[in-house]
Amino acid sequence: MIEYENLKKLNAPFEKGYDDAWQRVRQSGWYILGSEVKQFEGSFAHWLGIRHCIGVANGLDALVLSLRALSLNEGDEVIVPSNTYIATILAVIQAGLVPVLVEPDIHTYNIDPALIQKSISSKTKAIMVVHLYGKCCDMKSIMGIADDHKLYVIEDVAQAHGAKQDGEVAGTFGHLSAFSFYPTKNLGALGDAGAVVTNSDDHNKTVRRLRNYGSDVKYYNELAGVNSRLDELQAAFLSHKLEKLHDINQHKRKLASVYRELLGDQFILPSVDTRYEDVYHIFNIRHERRDELRTYLKEQGVGTEIHYPVSPVHQHAMKGVLDHFQTPIADEIHRTTLSLPISYFHTEQDVREVCRIMNQF
Ligand SMILES: *Cc1c(COP(=O)(O)O)cnc(C)c1O
Image 1: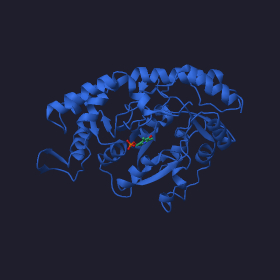
Image 2: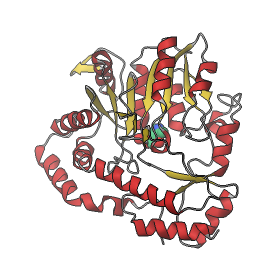
Image 3: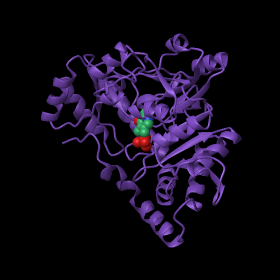
Image 4: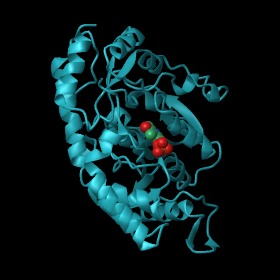
């Protein structure tokens, strides 16, 4: 049996460091916004090469607080990709803003810059890009469009810790960027965790306040904030795992290269472009008979996932909110995509076995 994911196996190499982290936090007697959060914020900002990192409770909050830091007006429009995970769109709605869907490029699965242009209206105030599956969006083009139209750019980097375009790392292009450290992400905690990063001193100050009841000084509230603090214990775990993030990304790249080498051409593989360094949060293929293929693989002992079976437009929760958008490209991706095993614990041998079984379909 080759499982799609197994968090216990994924985290096994880090156990000693996690034990040390737990002891440190337990013995410190300081459990909220202490030295561990501070340390992780510093290390993660350094890892990205950005001025500020603000630890928050999860990736969704990181997106919402990034949007709130822009002080937009209720009803302002934010451009988002039509094939993203629902969190991106929920963040826009939670912030009192209006999501405008733009279709992805069918080859990269990332938002298509040429289509962004066409969706900009007088109400558009921001573009929220998503570096889906671990591939950086075409940020060079997108930042150009944003500059021309004076729009803010927020990056959803939940799936792309360390992905690059032209040597520049995802999360450092836009005005603010949101990370998730949900356990399955390339940098995953042992629970919920997230972060906002920015080069702006002002945005840093605002997000820091917002995550902690809108307050810098205890019991004095400057803003109507929320409780969305990164937990000390999760921060301690993340500091340890961050030391190995490069290895994790390299390992996933290696497994991806084995898939590319061995999979037959009946499967549509993710595009490769030398300008981009992908981190393969997910390795997806597309196939006309996706559901049949998935069942076959299950019978042969190979676990797979679908990211995602239902696109945001077709979610029940989005009735009356998004269903006026036509999204044929997103629909096609959702209909045909299948995610293959590519976790840190998988071996090249595992991937060879998956390819052998797939090629017999
Ligand atoms: C995981 C994910 C999120 C949300 O992160 P949580 O930490 O689960 O709130 C947001 N956007 C994308 C694209 C994601 O994959």
